[in-house]
Image (cartoon, rainbow, N blue to C red; front, side):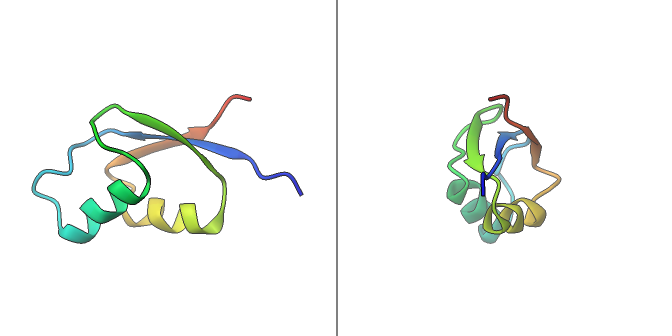
Length: 63
């Protein structure tokens, strides 16, 4: 089974956010605003994204 990939971009700062949100941002590998990372499309990744949908943008990664 081939897993897709997601491009996750940090659109809003983690400043002033709860510690849990900051931990999720770091867990996704994001450090700076407008930084993008490519991650595997897994339930674990979506679980983190669903906790902070107002902070990140998600789109399929071009292969």
